[in-house]
Image (cartoon, rainbow, N blue to C red):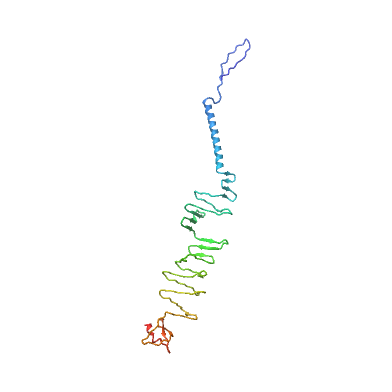
Length: 291
């Protein structure tokens, strides 16, 4: 764009005509202008697409001022409703369910719960697997709703705090070592049996052992010997009738006349045998049993 300047003069004066002055174009023209418009249009399209994607993500993920989807942010922490799947470890101080529902932890392999100290070391571990439940800690304890210890396990002992321990298995309870208890009792109308199939069975008590059957018999069966030993006391058989049905009967050279009466004789080694009763003692006559 060229602009010419004109000057007016009075008659009789002569002035030199100034040369034409040129004013250059200011702005963006041509292909630069088209590129600028194209770039602005491209930015506008990207802005619209980003805004649409943001609205779509907010709608799909259920974003709200209080949380995202079933996840709510409250003053007490995070509240998650429904079923959730965690692909990586979950770290939390406390996990609890709603008041009207139970808490379910489920995994295709196992569920592991670890407790760590301030240094990050594992102090307790609960591993629930498909075939075994493992617990690693210094002590394992189960309490009642009142806080009373019901079951406690550590490296030294196992403590059962209930008033009664009931074993309902058909084979009973198997103990590889000693058992210390103040009372061993069977259920009502059930038999109590203490058995050691391949070894011996020993019952020790500093103040005595009381075996009592209020409505039945007490039997002691042994393939070898049954010994009743008292170091400082006596062996007392207190009953209306004492029967020894399988005592051997002594014999002598001649045939004696038996009236169905016998006397019990004792050998020097403590063996008992029967002797046909007579007017006097006949143990000497039948002493061949002791030989």
